[in-house]
Image 1 (spheres, rainbow, N blue to C red):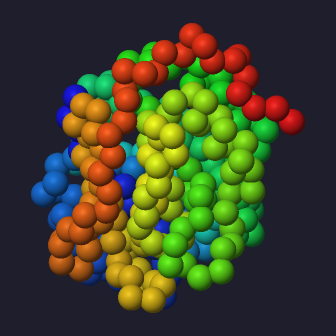
Image 2 (tube, helix red, strand yellow):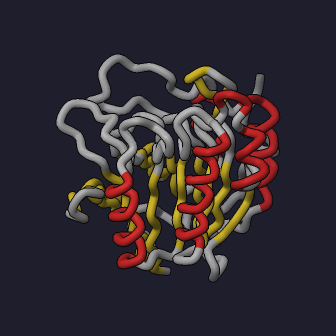
Amino acid sequence: MQKKIIQISDLHFGEFKFCNRLKDNLKFQIEYENPDLIVIAGDITSMGYLEEYNMARDFITDLSNIAETYVVPGNHDSCNVGLIHFRNLIGDRKFIGSDKSDDVIIIGLDSSEPDIHDGKLGFDQLEWLNDVLNRIPSSKFTIVTFHHHLLPIPQTGRERNILLDSGDTLKLLVSHKVNLVLNGHKHVSNSWKVEDMVILNSGTATTTRLYGDNYPAYNKILIRNNEISAYQIKTETGQERFLAHYTIDQNNKNKSDLPKSCFTY
């Protein structure tokens, strides 16, 4: 199996540091890459207002003409009762999808909490996720995406807003041998590997809300059989920077030994 995935997040349409030139660059670069799947890991708006959602929807529609595109909400999207607009203009806040060939399964979750920056998945979503993962064939490459970062991100200052139920979430994902987790929120690209699961964060692609000497960027992910390679792409120029390369054991996903439920409260 060979797949190309574009992971973007923290677009922040309507924000004063949003840059239309970066948005146009991003669209052009994604068209050139011609990926199999596009994942937007939250914060498509600045404050959840309708006019911001309308701008985001138009951009997402353009991306959908390039490849299958999936979006989860972030904390900024849930401000000002913005999740009503998300539902009406973007889609479901949690979902199960796939690429066109159905080789890759993607599960989206909503980690946002209205009008605060903290995030969690909560018991109901974790229970739903556990049930969904139990039903996915072990042969499928499985991706889970939600906005808040599952693990701390280096070079982002004082740690804030990590997923509040990250421990239970991490246990569930690892127990089910999920291949790839895609997050945003911190505006810094990063990669971790926990057991046989790769966790990738994407930076802000279209704003200058940046830490230190970081720059607007997004991630390109290449999947080749049992290998995952990730690159950070600078939105300003399209320049690539190697982010990570991992080998995973896709053949070791026999779920027959999994408990019916992988988390307890």
